[in-house]
Length: 78
Image 1: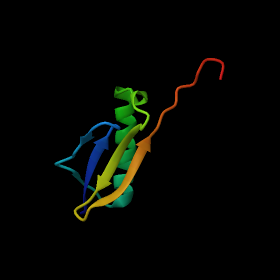
Image 2: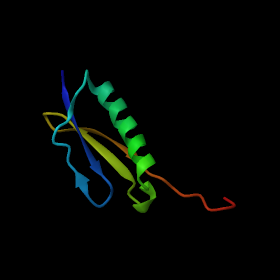
Image 3: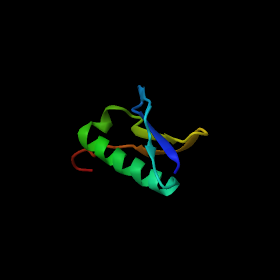
Image 4: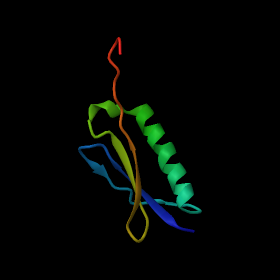
């Protein structure tokens, strides 16, 4: 079973995942990254950085893909 690591970049700092997760494949890693990103954006204010929030997914070989949330606040009347 492939092992994936989910590093978090908030535009200022990188939190490196040292443990990772064993998942059935890339599709399962994509779902995990998307769900994790949704959970993080509920807990934090992703609007504090213009870069948004990114989960960079890697496996034993290296970088695989990334998932990014970029929020934009609507102004009243827009």
